[in-house]
Image (cartoon, helix red, strand yellow):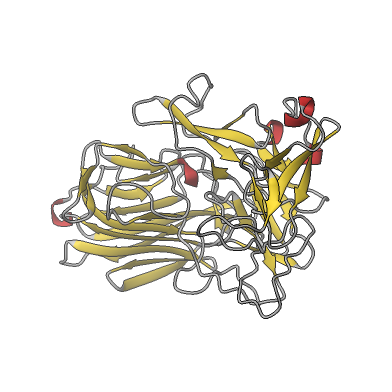
Length: 419
């Protein structure tokens, strides 16, 4: 379901406040394989909960961007004046009590008549949220002057300054927004497993997927396509993208010498719930470098898929003869299954690319490519993306050397960058 709303965009950016902890979600009722969000006593925060590979609940506390509050019934952060905060910070605080806002160095909240009111320091100053609780231009070590837009107050750096003006509060760790396919001034925000909102950008801005927000459409941005997930295995099995996505990892061995991950062909898997319900997108690129002894395969083995749900929408698999790329798409209420297969070569190391772009699915293995039409958008699937494991195919046996997932074309600047 997509809901159109009439009020102006409020930028919602959520960043992790703490490292994931088992204590955060021990008392919550968590549905495995779905997004689980819960309120906390501070209305500017919420917590995101998941189940780990041992079946234990864990989670982390997240911040709403300034000046928004968490609204549980729609599972998103909304402008503070549209949310009734039952645990209002300023309820028993004196007028003028201040605390820092999140994601904008000029922002702070000030208490007035028992309510929190968003405020901004003058351009160039930042809010010192320590004991001083005041605006200051005395900068801490390694901190630049705070020339960022805050609420409706535009940044005004000194004349001839070489400082960059930041027009967004922060680069989000997790982007739950997608571009609208017909109007760059709109974007689609996922709210629940079955609901998405079509929201308008502020006047004079357009949506950019890479920074997950609306940017000025009067200047050419230099934002390049950024990966949503990056596994280079240089140090460990963790995501090294801007998102820091939490992965459920079972029976996968890290090889520090080869900087790769070994999958045993039995019960090894890595899984991310970040990629469940990724619909309404037309651009998806998965680059994976892996090594396997495909010549001995007697059945399909899974490299990457979301086939915990059927029908699935993303699938990369191989047998002794081919590497298969499958994408499920939807157009005009019609579902399509689109498949490309590339012959296996002699080399055990394969550089494979799954590319859904402009209603075309392209599969590439070590420079050999083929394409088929893939009408419409990626189909909605409620299950996460699994690496090396499948319930209906043979699990992967071999090494994953590198893996990246993009919602844009990494060969060019962001597809959602407009002049």
